Image (tube, helix red, strand yellow):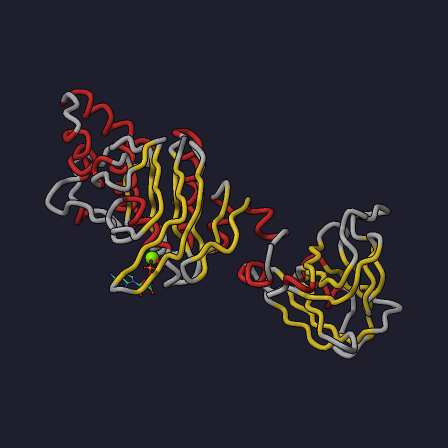
Length: 351
Ligand SMILES: Nc1ncnc2c1ncn2[C@@H]1O[C@H](COP(=O)(O)OP(=O)(O)O)[C@@H](O)[C@H]1O
Ligand SMILES: [Mg+2]
C-alpha cells in the first residue's frame, strides 16, 4: 500500500511552491527526495505529514486518503534535522512517550525501550539526560522515538546533515540496516546525492517544486531523461552525433549503440548527444590524435582533460594513473569509451 501522491499542489504566502507532484512509494520502500536547497523537499514532507495545507491533489497513506486527516492520525512520523527531543525528559522517557500515548503497559514499554535502545546502539542509556549525550546519540534517540510510534510511514528531513562525515556514514548505515530489518515505508529528504544513491530503493530528483525524474539509483545516474538530471549527479561529457540503424557516428568516432558487437536498432535514427560519465572514458597513451590539456591529481582519483579539437573531454582515472603511465600535459593520446555506459539523448528533447 505505502504512499501515493497525485498532482499535489502547495502554496506558501500565496506563491505556489509545489506544482503538481506525483509520487508513489511502495510498502516497505525507502525513497529519497533529493534536490538543491529551496526546491520544496521539506514542504512536500510536511504536506505528507499534514503539517502544511495543500491546494490540490491527493495524499494516500496505506490505502486511505489523508488530505483531511489530522497529522497525528495519519500514521506518519516525521524526524526533523533539529530533532525536537523533549529536553526535560531522559532518553528512556523520550522513547517511551509515543508508547504511553498508545497506552501500552508499563512492562511492555520498558521492554520496548530496551530493545529500541539496542537497535540504535545505545544500550544502557535509559536514564541519561538529553543534555548529557552527544549530537550523534541524540539523533539515534530521535530515530528510536520515531520507530517507537510504529509508524506506517517514516519521514526523515535531512536528519544527518548536521553530523560530521564519519558519524553521518555511521547513521546512514544504521538507518539502512533498521529499514531493512523493520521494512518501514520511509521517505528521506536529502541534498546529498551520494546519500540518496546509497540509501534508497528509488530517488525522486526535485527541482523548483517539480520532480525531474523518479527512478532507481542506477537508472537516475546512468539513464537520465534530461541533461539537468544528468548534471545534478556530476560532470558529464556530451558528444554530438547521429544514429543510423543502431550505429552512432560522431567526430570522435563510430560506435555501436549497444555493448560489444551488438547495435540497438530499436533506437530511432536521428540526431543525438551521447552522454558519457568521465570515469567511463579511458585514456589511450599511444597513437592518439588528441592533446592532454590538464591533469588534476586529487588523491583517490585524478581528472584529465583532453582537447579533441572541437571540444574538451573530461576523464576520471585512478589517482596517480598518469604519473605511473608516463602521461604528461602536452602528450598526444586517444580515448576509449566503455561500452554500455553511454546514454543517447535525442537532440530534439534536449533541455
Ligand atoms: N513558511 C513559509 N512561507 C513562505 N515560503 C516558504 C515557507 N517555507 C518555505 N518557503 C519557501 O518554499 C520554498 C521551498 O522550501 P523548502 O520546502 O523548505 O525547500 P527545501 O527543503 O528543498 O530546502 C523555498 O523557496 C522557501 O523559501
Ligand atoms: Mg528542507
